[in-house]
Image (cartoon, rainbow, N blue to C red; front, side, top):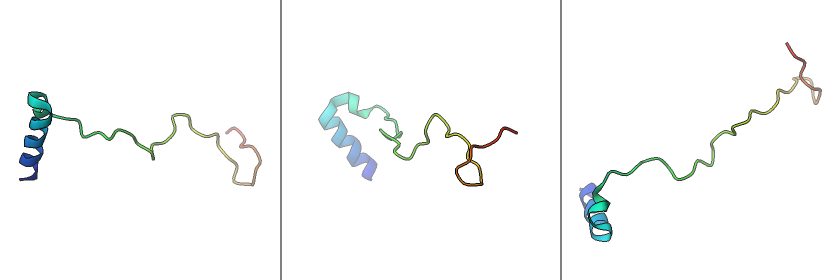
Length: 52
């Protein structure tokens, strides 16, 4: 029922263009991870991690 009400409302506001499928993807992802990984840290305080 809610879907029909939403479609009618979109059609009134946007015409036929309001009836097309829309993406469900969010506009932003605030908890998304960064593209660059952080450097590895040692388990022993602030010492730099040694290569394996």
